[in-house]
Length: 116
Image (cartoon, rainbow, N blue to C red; front, side):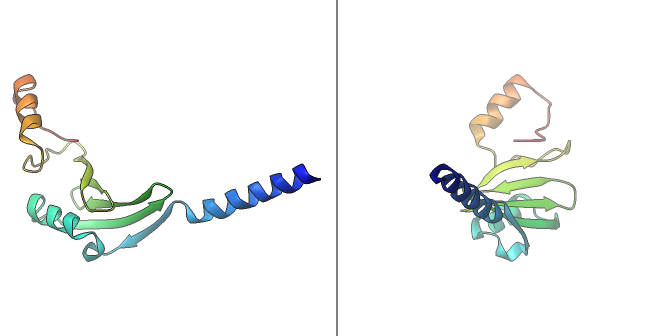
């Protein structure tokens, strides 16, 4: 009986946590962290935001932004870019550290960066 109660309690806790995990909600661009807003304005000026989402899970909060041209950008809770995917479209390189740009140009001259 004690084992059954422990198992039931564990399942109840997991069920409760799963209801709160993966809480995604659509937000407005002005609800993104300021750093993310500045990043978009500086490096993706003129590209419209189609969708902005706040993703909450056990590890924290992240923000996903989909631009009208299909580019997807993931930001940390502080608004720092984590992943940028141009979906086969060349990305601006102004936000990529110079060392990475130089290494890529040396090894893959003439190639465009479409994901980082």
